[in-house]
Image 1 (cartoon, rainbow over the protein chains, first blue to last red):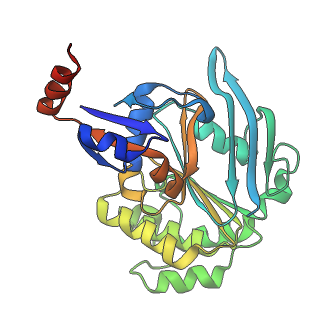
Image 2: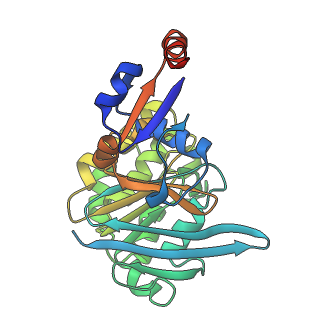
Length: 48
Length: 240
């Protein structure tokens, strides 16, 4: 399972699995699958 | 940095279809910006609005001008290239250069000629006689010879193989781009150009889904991959 988090301390997520900086392509796919939202209201943790 | 493009609440409909639905974004000077979205997201409509080719509602300023009312002035400082298949097959290379020189006041024919002399393209050749890679090189010659502050590229490498796509972007970056120039481009091949981009604008259903500098996005988002074993372990821990 792959999830994306916004403005979240990576140290908090590290015990849960493998963390890394998403590529632009990964972020794009996640955003498109999560639906369009205004940039300032983008919620964290949208599952990809 | 100064804004090259300021767009606020852009809206455009084609019949019942909302091509742009309140899109707002800013493009700063000296950046390479990818306007990225799925088919029908509103990318081309946004580009057409920026170029003054279509009317839209909302506030739009490009290089300090309103493209809807000051298109002629604006086009002196803008270069636009659609996909590489747009040159007609009957056109000779020399005619393509003459045409560009005739329509763009900042086109430097000598510079285009210098670039083409480094290729196998002959001035007398017709476009239909050129390979797809050569057509790409011809396009690059036309782009590189325009001294524009804003370069707009709409799917510039559509239909090209990997080698020519890479050549196109490498040449653009090394021979054209500098801090006085801004490049706005759309593409479907995000993976190939993400190292080239300084900024991205994701657009979907006519709205901006995400916008920002690539570096900042890397700091803002974290990707977490959880294996089934890790998920099961966490579920077990969460149970009372």
